[in-house]
Image (cartoon, rainbow, N blue to C red; front, side, top):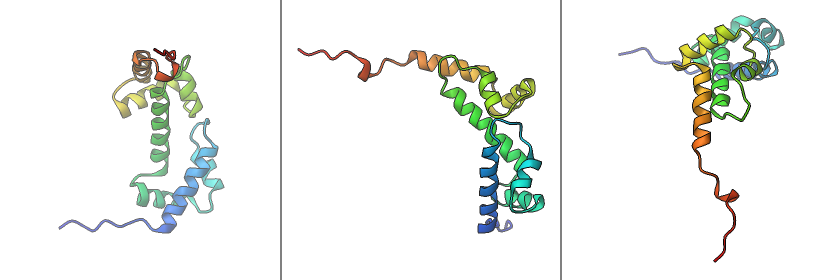
Length: 137
């Protein structure tokens, strides 16, 4: 039989929630855990422990992955004129070559391919019924 899986405590969940909220205030800047740790009510060791208990991975990995997922979500909702660079920079990725490699490793495609596919889907959508002229017989 396997070992019992330990559920994270309410304290760990609160710590993780606090760190996630702090991390949101640093959106658009490169991920800097030391600044996040300074704002938190507990020390780095407890933060790392809490993230491992709640998410099974360290805070740096979790927060980085969350930023990548946010970039992907925005690229998939492509608005006209949107560029990969704009979105990447908005989420704090400043080394664009490294960002592209990390994105490709995470999602199996380049960010530009995600954006291109979203634009093709958007162009293929029929105009909505709301924009159709009102024709009466």
